[in-house]
Image (cartoon, rainbow, N blue to C red; front, side, top):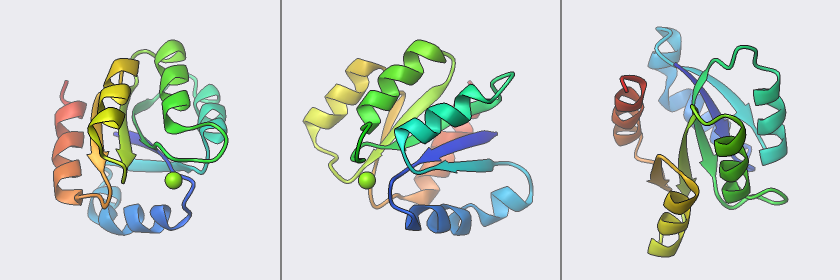
Length: 125
Ligand SMILES: [Mg+2]
């Protein structure tokens, strides 16, 4: 499954590559990284046909926030699943993410075992 990971923190890429090393090596997951919402939309616009299954997006980013990106993605690519990732896992953010159409919420620091289970479940939908 092809996953687009959006986060303004550069370290996140290394963390995901490390945590998903086995899955990437065996071809279960392939990852593409974007450092802003705008970059993520550019990447998606270049996909023809759209072969991403899922976006994992940070909420707190300069410029376009994760909520802005979520809104845009759900309008333009309704089949894409979006999980929001944020340290600010308070009820208000979770509610807001859900109301815009998020398919789930992943608190930071990310529990990778739990995330892998969620990804497997989503890919089987
Ligand atoms: Mg951030």
